[in-house]
Image 1 (cartoon, helix red, strand yellow):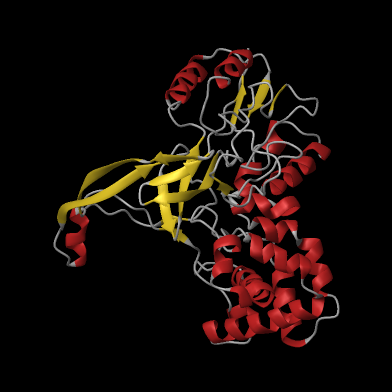
Image 2: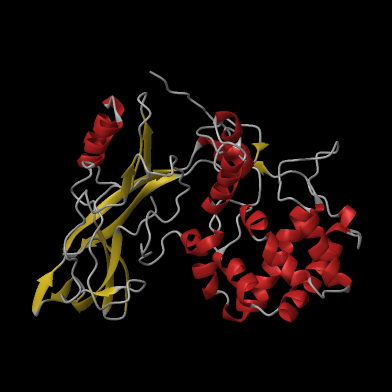
Length: 396
């Protein structure tokens, strides 16, 4: 679901294991925990003998939650909405699995305490979407992107009721889609645990909307919509969504800058289509090199700290542009973006040993699966968010 359902509190320390809350000095709940560890057998494959042992750590908890880090006279504790209510999700999911209609799923979703997007369809043609879980009502008057003071003036004001949580059944538009995007209009991000939700109109879910609207204009129906997931899972989302912006950036560009930008525009965003040598379009390397150069030009002077806020990209979305890259493409003047393109040209020429874009082809990206024990698995071709797609047609 990616909604911020936990908050960090800055506890004012009164001693090594005590703190102030609402004018009182409170003791933390602390204990020593012995953690046993051992390295996996696969270490042998790398020439390292397996290691094992025990490490004792001191764990402390305040009224808000477990202490995660200390600095000076402050301890930072994490408050989780789901704390001591975890079993509710197991009960709710069991009811979801046994539900026989969308209405029954709706009742089951009300029991869920964990935040995870949920969609359902039944054989009567009903559909529904829920953004469930214990979602706290944050305190007024504080910047929710920063830790709250733990001294008592920034406490939660309760939780949203199931009716207040984002949900819909049988919407007028006749369809539903979700890719961990914003669950409703006016939703806030808290301290943005998922940076990709900050991309606004360039969020990856907009690509689903784009393809879906195209299919509807063509007449809709299963045959025209069945391939949308396959398309969105094999194309760099922001490259497709930013076609108009890239064209505007390229107007007036010349020389090396024009070469890079034209290479990007000639590419349709597919990172899965290869030639007979197993290499992908030159636009793949050109796009990622250019967007990275734009980010460095816009925010590089703030590194390394800025990377924590703007440069997160996980291994499920390796072709998704980061918030920092999207920010740079939206806000840098064209002349600065041309300079970024020139810088990208130099990087590409050095990497591929050629100034000709036709040579800027790289092998298709692969997943490197992990495994337990000493077993190993072969690499598999990368797809954005999964390698298996199941389509089910429901009917009476």
